[in-house]
Length: 118
Image (cartoon, rainbow, N blue to C red):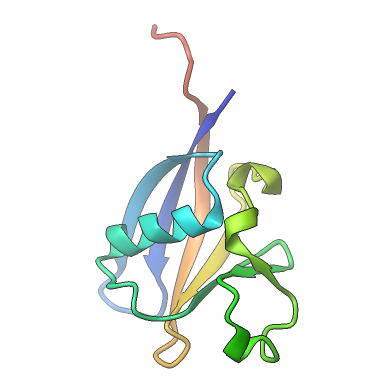
């Protein structure tokens, strides 16, 4: 059974704060999750990116940069569900290694999508 994960994405070191709240199901792979963040934050998907979560580096492998990211896991093979995230867990999403747009991504809530209505 899928859960709905609610995240708050905040662009770090920017004032005023720029943030978005999103919900996705826990069966999303990180490549799809990246696309959701791109749309939510109005980025153009022109640059490399990576996630740092629970001591792991997850992103899009690129043979030209493999030596710089020897521990990078392929985002097309890692699912949100597989990380067993709990409310309050947070990670970072880095977009554009040159400009270093770093985002803080805490999990605000995990909702069972089949909850009974009251």
